[in-house]
Amino acid sequence: MAGKTQDKWYAAGLAFECQQSGNCCSGAPGYVWVTKAEQTAIAEFLGMKDGKLGKRYIRRVGLRVSLKERPGGDCIFLERDGNGCTTCRIHKVKPTQCRTWPFWDYNLKSPEHWNNAADGCPGINRGKLHTFVQIETQRLTHPPK
Image (cartoon, rainbow, N blue to C red; front, side, top):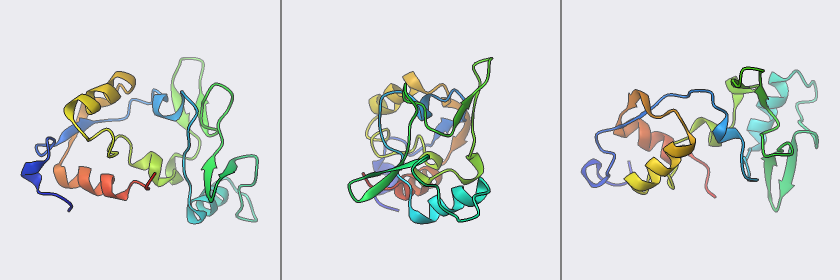
């Protein structure tokens, strides 16, 4: 793992348990980067015989590909019910970027960054304690910006 455990402010671990708020899947415009393999997995999960998502679900941004968003900032795969609960239509095959939330470099820069992320994510600082090794594994898996 990069860096020594004792050098990281989160060496004792961090609590996180998804509360299905959908806040990490909506908001200001942004990008959810998807690899070709992730696109294929999503397409197959959705039952698309050709294994391609197409322009309905993805957009090219420079040399990369991102999932599309609906007006208002919701990910194309975020579904909301009448009670305010959300689900991810592709949860079982969601992209690495989604799977590694909230253990991204930016959120882990400092306790202040972590707590700022917690302001918008009710699952941060709740639930299961993730160990340093688990956090670093997620952090190092997150795709580069």
